[in-house]
Image (spheres, helix red, strand yellow):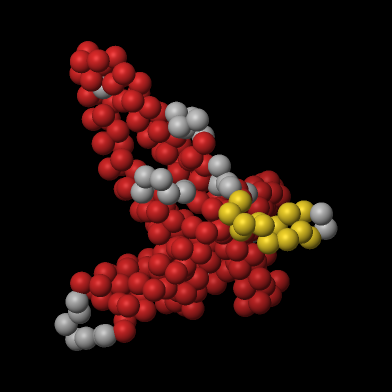
Length: 250
């Protein structure tokens, strides 16, 4: 079972909380790591801001860098008006980044490798855009689907494409994060399995295992980069989608 690259993604019950309508409600390893990510992120920010100083220490510097990084992302993608959504974007970025980094630690669980988790996060963004878009713009929000300057004879086709593209956002938003994390960890597991398998063939096997070992080290470094980039991509797409709610006109 240890060589199974899929086994690492198995959701396991830690404790059963009860039943609702015959459906078992349990506290799982996935829920435990999401809770740990919330505690880690909130605790880190509280620690970083508890002793605020004009000359920041290391922890405060890290917190300020992350804050400014996300704030610049929001301003550049959605304008100054987009800063009202800064708490949402900052929360999503921090939550996903910490979960991705947890998954890089051997023996820990990769929560973002499950489509059910990434889909819920994407739907939060999707419905936020719809609700705020209608709240702020009313029926003018539908201008999002009617680009200006389009000839009338192809307008129905363009509107159809725009609506279809809008409705597919939660799918692409969630699958991108889920697929990258899932594929990366499976690849790491496969190459690590080659090392163990080849090492069982004595001296020749150890020599042969050097190549998959080098690839595993390189892929691990790449996966750390991917873990950050996927959190960034999810956050920047969130900003772009929120910009449509703020400025639905093309």
